[in-house]
Image (tube, rainbow, N blue to C red; front, side):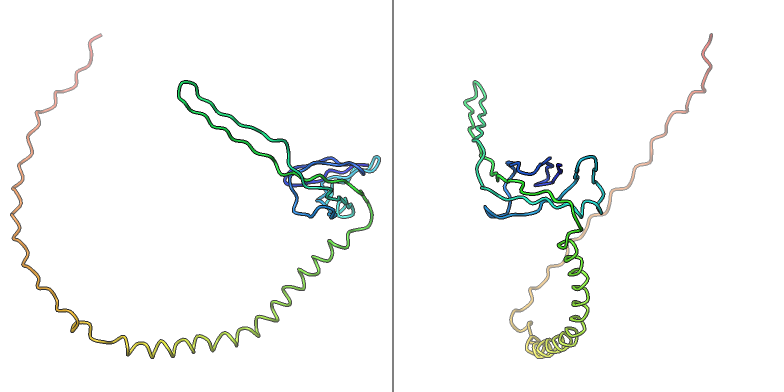
Amino acid sequence: MFAVISLGGKQYRVRKGEYLTVDRLAHEAGSTFSPVVLLATSGDEVSIDAADLAKVTVTARVDEHLLGPKIRVFQYKPKKSSKKARGHRSRLSRITIEEIAIGPAKKAAAKPAEKAAAKPAEKAAAKPAAKPADKPKPAEKAEPAAKAKPAAAKPAAAAKPAAAKKPAAAKKPAAPKKPAAEKPAAKPATEPEA
């Protein structure tokens, strides 16, 4: 019996009791989790249907978080005095597959569906109650705006005299256009002699 699971955008074929080193997971060391199952087999039966895979549960435990081997990257360009040394260590997690169970549909999958159905009903009930509270606020904002308008209506012209404008310079008349040059008459097309 084995299953194909998806972790961090990669797919792994796993069996019960196997351990894997995968990209760093967001789970604490020692905690268990259920990865997404893409395929499961038990003997001759192969499950790839979403309905069948809802019945399959793979349980994995995070053993430890560790660092991968140090990878050194060295770039060198001869005769140019150019060198770059870089490197990195991948953040990894070691997990152990504790169980691959094929049974009735998961209860955890039903719970989010119930919660999703309950949330729109709660939001719909909360929205009518929130709307009457929102309406007085714009009216309150309109009153202070009306009070601010008379204060802003001070004469601005008294503060600074306007600068006198200079008369615009007289424009020169445009140069007269020259008549178009006459083109010589086109020669009649002659057929090439054979």
